[in-house]
Image 1 (cartoon, helix red, strand yellow):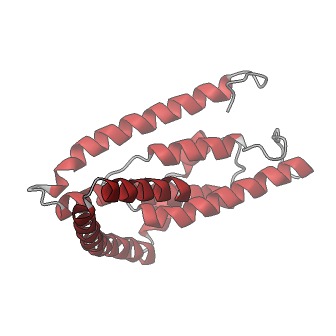
Image 2: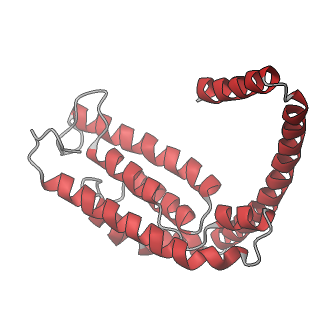
Amino acid sequence: MNLLWGGMLLTGMIFGMASGRSGLLSEAVLSSAREAVELGITMMGIMAFWMGIMETAQDAGLITSMERRIQPLIRLLFPGIPAGHPAAASIALCFLANFFGLGNAATPAGLQAMRELSELEEERRRGGIPGAAQKRGTASREMCTFLILNISSLQLIPVSIIAYRTQYGSANPAGITGPAILATAASTGTAILFCKIMEILPKNSKFMV
């Protein structure tokens, strides 16, 4: 990505100077830098607000209660994870953060979930936990399922999109909420269906997750 973005920027600068538009190039650089700072401040304020709500809910025990309530769903989606395994709690926290549109809060929980799923797979290789282990260097079924569902990301409040719309002068920044819920519900439903189809395919299938 560094090479891609660096190449795009360098190409644009070379083209601008070669075409005699260095003045427009300088103006675009300055205006874009100013806009990036303004957008960053807007995003920071909105994210701080929702992160504060999440912290308050965490301190009040609401998040823990919600984690327990969605554990049956986690067991349905990840039948290979043993009951009480810490990966289930991390996955639940990541899903809840995404549900409320807090991608920044979801990232640490998602990384922790992947780390715990990797440890679970390693225990399977050693024979400590029942279940078919993948060959070393291959993502487990639970890892693939978690990644797909995390990408589809059902959201109740699209915080980032609302922040962008606010920054760029939308008359109704939160008007995207309804369509976003429908779109992410459809993507998440499709992801769940895909994962379940992959689970029932023969183990030697080249399409198996």
